[in-house]
Length: 525
Image (tube, rainbow, N blue to C red):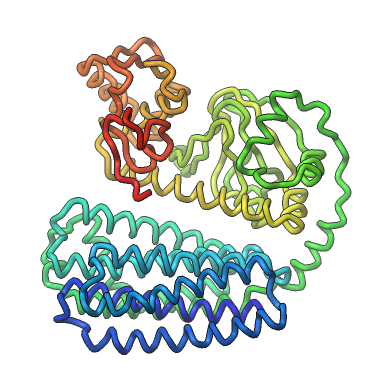
């Protein structure tokens, strides 16, 4: 049943992604391009929508889908009705061109993708690892579709010398690369070989070359010589191929007999009862307030925490190594933990620095797989730990916990992408200013000074710079009347760091959107 639903919804999304590209080119060219193509595409999309509406009535009558998902599908149907109402405005150029891509992306396509992932996730016969691979492919394909639409606007308006436009394209490419890596890491070796052969076509290799140019030399003649129509064609070839891979995955989401047996054995685990009486009131209140446990009934939360422990860890202590099978979920109550990737030469790249309230290792626990990176205590820490089998068992009986887990993984992914964006696109001064501002926001503006939370060499690695570069940058801040007292940075003014604010930082700021905001940032709220 779930396979058929996913196929129908996937076909709608595919046509909507094409429609988004067509109307973008039509609107930006003032009707000079794709005037006939958009009418044909409207019809193609409507065929898939009609199939969905017919099937929706059957699902509703036969009660073969949960009421929650039925409500979400009904909401998606309402959004599709809005699309039909807006098409005439698009054809007559009365729909603002600047809003077109966002309308298709966030109003129509994104809700459909969300419900597809949820339907796949909560089908008991599906393998969580395969579902995760499937969801990463969906998001990779969607970022590719957004690049198709945005890129055509760039070619029509010759925007590849516009730094803001280039940054948007580069971010989309970075997101695609991240989703692609995760996707290929999750599929089994047999399918990976098949998929990599499919992706090794000459048209797709051409896109990889274009991506290299966009990232390193966007003023290149190889971009200026390409037309918007040619871009649409080459990107559409790639997205059509990704649709074939999507259908292949949908037909193979179910769990294997071997994993079914392991799952059955896991359910039979009888873990020792530790109780939660050792949790003091402070810990209990903090744990109850964590987003990870949001919406979970008290009895379910109590069952989950019966097997939990609170442990103290010393600076330098390893939690786990890259490639090690996930045995526990960790939640930071206090202190700092670094996630990093190591090299054979002994060097390391810090991916994330995690502190109070952050979860560690949730994706590997959820997928019952090995950790993709290593974790080490950066400063003395207190962690809540829960056995991985207990988490997986509770996920199967608690929709809220499952959604919280997915939300956490998505937030970590977005945080990592934002960190990559910040370290690649910001100057060294901007990186350090952004880092200090984040520390200030953690104190909610209560003091005009920030304390460096861990070693300066570790901060430098986190900000993708050498320790000596970080030291020179701090000296630059001294010239701006900042005072450096050992590991404390004293601000000349409480708002001295506001100039380093960006969209994600603004959303975490209590002054954002108020009269006290010194440098308002457009967040799209």
